[in-house]
Image (cartoon, rainbow over all chains, first blue to last red; front, side, top):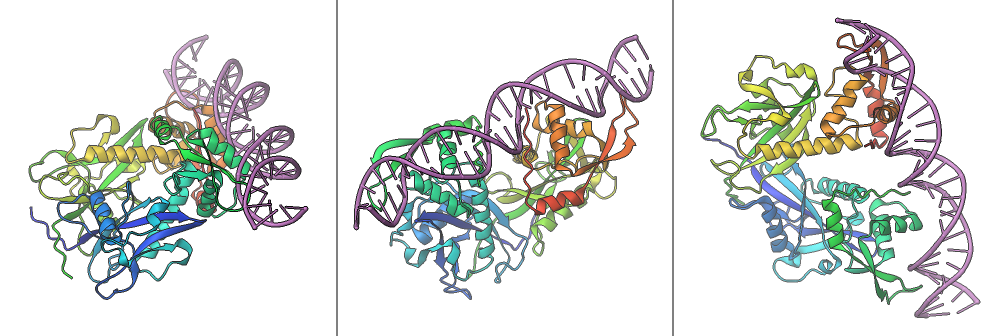
Length: 230
Length: 230
DNA sequence: TCAAAAGTGTTGAGTTTACACCCATGC
DNA sequence: GCATGGGTGTAAACTCAACACTTTTGA
């Protein structure tokens, strides 16, 4: 049985980073073709013997130098036949988060043309990448309500207020600080350290760290992490 | 820029139906190749000028005669290089539900080789289709908790107990009948009719109908339909 | 001593859970 | 009259939402 098909398959990666009350997305500058010099999501064509998720990790490393641990499949864009003007491309989009260290792009590899952009001041984007980022952000927002992600986005030791601010930034609405703290602490997967944040004005905040072992145990047991507040 | 790629792209469709406290999945018997006569999900290769979602609708109609309205993208299977033993195939899986009328397959088209199987007594399946069905079922179950789907799976007029039974069947646990009724009625998108179910033993139940207009309005307003109970 | 951010409890409202008996029908 | 499934209310436990003042630090 011979199948003729003239469709290319690609992956795109949406990587979010967080710093100082701003969400960032990692973009690269296109090097070739009509869209040369336009900004776009990291990504590219899948190789013949390559699983999709390997392709995502590879492209990210090649194009930006950023190493990610887990990328989650977001959506497959394959209804718009002209999303790539050259020929038909179906793209499987993955998204993930990285910790703040990665926000300093190591200049190695091809990374000169990679840059972090604040989510609210994105440049003009190639293809349908604006739409894809929107969808990824929607998913991130939705996830935040039912499982406490976001630890990946923070330093390994962080003051409680960083977590608060991360939530207000992503959800784009204020939260009740007292209720939020009660709720998060009740899950019992972050632990106080005996350190304090040194810099900045105001009273220094105690630093907390994420207890990933506890968190994964709870996940396995299927505990549900709903987080509700104004 | 020339890209060499030897990967085929296909879609698979998981269609659920419901009848008498049982969930059914629509399968077809393979006609060609090594896997001839094995059961598999309806699906096939995407045509060059064809959006993914059109491909799903087309394949379903061709292979089973079943007409679906909306199919939701489930997941793209592309990590296992040998999921199809012949060559590399990446498959975008879609799932959806149909109303009980469709459970009687119209003998037209190629439908002779299509059949509804109860979810708990599936035959041996080709490829990784067992895994795909499992994932679709997990998603169906998850959806049921946060939005009252399932009306599609029932007759247009149904006794309340049908809805109850649908929930216990999918969630695989008993529910509190009184609390369930209170909750569902409080959403106010099903309406009493003045008819009663005629057949069966016991006291005849009032028939209800789904108020899709109301439901869609609420969805637009972003009302959240959480349904919790034992 | 002032500005800035951190830390902390209580109360009322609303929601969820648990629970058992009577009703209408066909046989 | 009995078997079968349909229909109904209430109280206790829990969770959520609203709300404001004190503490610690650096400048």
